[in-house]
Length: 159
Length: 159
Length: 159
Length: 159
Image 1: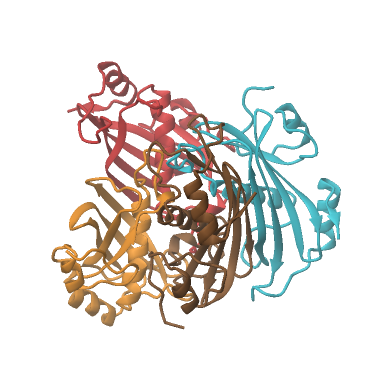
Image 2: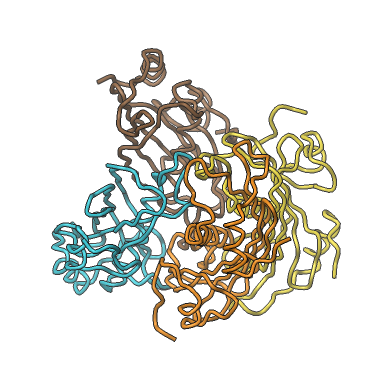
């Protein structure tokens, strides 16, 4: 396995496999644990992983041109998340966060996330996400173009 | 409903009912949304709720004398969490976070959490928690005294 | 000294003196240290205090009707801050954050902040704040009414 | 100016100059603004910069072998910080945080920090830092070796 993955840069299928991240992950980004992400137990705090998934999600949705995070966009809102913690992370460790879309609704989609250290899955999670109009209530449909991207790139299963 | 609950102070069954929090919740604490808990969408960020559950958990476990958060304690480690977001929270809103233990294993327990605003459940969640020795691997059993507290006070179901 | 100050509620001159906070502080709010505010050294992280000052500032400016934190407001932007750390804070400690306006410019003002535990100043700070138009560049003057409030209530010195 | 600096990797004098960071900065690290670092004003929150300085400090002190952030180390404690905000940062911007030691006491030292975007200083700060024994009170002297490093590499001025 190469020593260090490229930090803060989208990694695709080949680069992920080179760094020990197995199929079916096709999008990831490397980062390093910072001091402020630790809690008093000296490991990464449980809430921090939702922030890592959020950072990955922004890069993923911009790269796939599904969501731009600019004014005028519909609101991208979490409906539900889960996190499973298999092993802790510590100061200075290099990790790769991965994300993919697993299911597609009309105005919503489900993503899965992973946190890998040297090819080992330490933490994983999911998020159910919905696109809402500025009123915060009305669902906004994903365009066919965007649905196609998520189906083609990630094998997302339409509902 | 009384105007404001007492902030940052344990609320038990009667006080919770007075402020619109339904059974079976028996432990809660009121707080107010702060500016730094908002994200760029101007509502409370999705990761913040895990922090609120953590704050509630510390008060709950200390009040019930289950866990003290002092040096020498076994490690209290999250195994899994879930959060369901029903409606957003905004700057300055007063909310009551609630927590209870739902299941009891030998070295682990499951908690449920809620976030109520004027009696309406806006967000809820769960956490699977395990007690570990300083090695971070070996489970540490809950004493019978502590199991009794959680069964008697919360109706936790032993496994 | 009374046991516990009222949490998350504006405290004025008399209540502050009752809880050991000396003149010239005339506005404060009590809170309690949370687990997620600690870092790996087991004390409150140095960056957290800027967040506490921000929380106090929101309450202070809303109470004094100087700034409402609603859409359409000018931007309230930090130009400079300082923090002096005299002694650490630990999990569960009750503290009172205080704030006052010390100087007034045309489109800017300077605030001072304190963090008191049982009457002892543990941390203090300052912030130079400017009001900007939505373009983020043009200063927006404070109205005479608002200047009067800050001069009358806090003894802020106009420039 | 090259397009992107190397992320999360120490940059020394030549690499910094290549990316527009002027003398006398000799240590820096590139990073990118994340969604959770924004506040409701849609720019990086004022407290976040202290966290960036902390992340830079950990890398700097480990690289210069002055402080290792491992158990048994003396405590590294902030005595005072300042931040000057010249211009805001926004989602996705690439920045370089820089740090250097400016003054050296017996048990303390003063650092300066900068945040550069494409060669422009957006934010700068300072920190007065002290090394303490586990009692949190007694100062621990910096060894002559470590003082020499800071004097030789950064031109720190001994007191």
